[in-house]
Amino acid sequence: MDAKFEQFMRERKYLKSVSQSTLEWYRQTFTRLQIPNPTQSDLTEFVVTMRESGLAATSVNNRIRAVNAYLRWLGSPLKLGKLKEPQRVLSLYTEDDIKKIAKWKPQEPRKWARTRAQVLALTLADTGCRSSELLTLRWAQVDFDNLLLTVRGKGDKERVIPFSYELRRFLYQWRQKVKHDLVFGTQQGMMVSIRNAHHALGYVRRNENRPQDVA
Image (cartoon, rainbow, N blue to C red):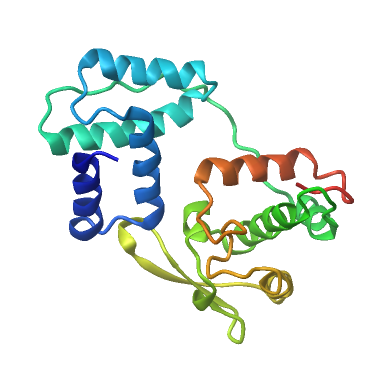
């Protein structure tokens, strides 16, 4: 990655105290952009390429926000306009949905990742945390004795969130399967991107009536 991108991220981390998930979001965006001093044509091509690859307008706008922050830091007069996003009513989990997810028994292939998605969905529903907060959560921040999670959100602000005995059971069982510090990381101990996490949760939502086959 170019030195200018790295310097921008260093300043965001140490001067703005942005979260680890935000830094990863910047890194993924700069990997797509690649050009540290983009022209307007470069920026247009950046957006067009993302759309051609199948990214939704919402996902592209997330990348655009990152690039605009970088352009301001760079002192560039350029700015990307946001794409029009479709207006959708968010689908919420009902009590019956949660019961179905809790009863699922993940199967091969990808049983480990499917179990992670199941426990993540249950933790989101139980605690009301943001997905970005849970994706950076570490086992040291899970207090099994007092049923508390310590999470870091926007602006690196710390919050303590209670969780239920029922969720404790799922988290404890999941703990036995994880060999790294991140609660909802990959099997190699890396952080899962917001996009991939939402994709997995979408699969959970679409397959909630199939209790024997979770992804």
